[in-house]
Amino acid sequence: MYIVGTPIGNLGDMSFRGVETLKKADFIAAEDTRVTRKLLSHFDIHTPLVSYHEHNSRESGARIVERLKAGETCALVTDAGMPSVSDPGQDLVALCGEHGISVSVVPGPSALTAAIAVSELVRGRFCFEGFLTIAKRSRREHLKSLINEQRAMVFYEAPHKLLYTLMDMLECLGERRITIARELTKLYEEVINTTFSEAIERYEQNPPRGELVLIVEGAIPAEKTVEPPIELALGYIAQGMSKSDAVRRAASETGYSRSELYRLVIK
Image (cartoon, rainbow, N blue to C red; front, side, top):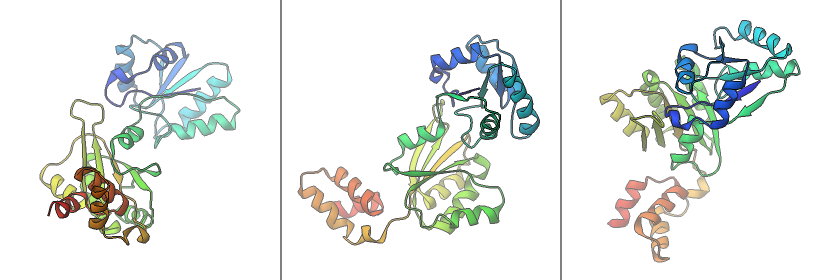
C-alpha cells in the first residue's frame, strides 16, 4: 500500500512521484471519491476508486486488505494533504501491519507543516493536538491538560467551531499569542499572528471561511521572565541590532507582547 500526499489547495503542489504512483496502482482508496475524481481528471489518471473514510473504515478496510493480500497495490489518499495525519488512514496502516502488508509513503503537501513553516511561534519543538472534540466539556478538559505545555501547540479546526474554540482557549490557557493559518495554498490564503482576545474580536465581526490550522504559544517558563523585557530589548539594540529585530528576539525569549514591547522601546 502507498500513502500518497495530495494538494491542500494548489494543484501545482502535486509531486511527479505522486502522480505516477496513482497511475500505476491497481486501485485508489479515497476519503471522498467525488473530490478525488477531480484530482485524477486534472492529471489524466484513470485508476479505479474505492471509498475509504471514517464511517466505513472497518468494512472497507477489510476489503482493501484482502485485495492487497491477493497481490494488488493500493494508493491511499485523503481529500487534501497527508493521509494518516488526523485521518482514518491511521487505522488502515495499522491493519496492514497486522497482516504483514508493506506500507510505503509518497510524501506531499501537509497543512500541519505548511502552517508551522509560516508561524513565528514555533522554535524547533511543537506538539500536534489535531482536532478538538465538539463536546464542550471534553474540549475544555483537553485544553486544561495543556496549561503547562511549553512547546507550541498545533490544532486543526473547522470554521464553524473556531470562535467557540478561541473562547475556550482564552478561558483555559489565559491570554496567549496564536497563529491562525487559513486556506493555505489557496487563492485566499491568510496567515494572522495575533492573540486570543484579538482573534475573538476579529471573528465575531467577520466569521471565517475555509479550513484552519491554529498554532498556540506554549507556556512560558518562569525563569525566562526574570529579566525585564524592555532592558533585554535595549541590550540587544546596544549590541547593534535594529529596533524591530531586538524587539522580536526579546519578545520571543520572554513571551511578552511584541507590539507592546516595541511601543516601550520607542518610548
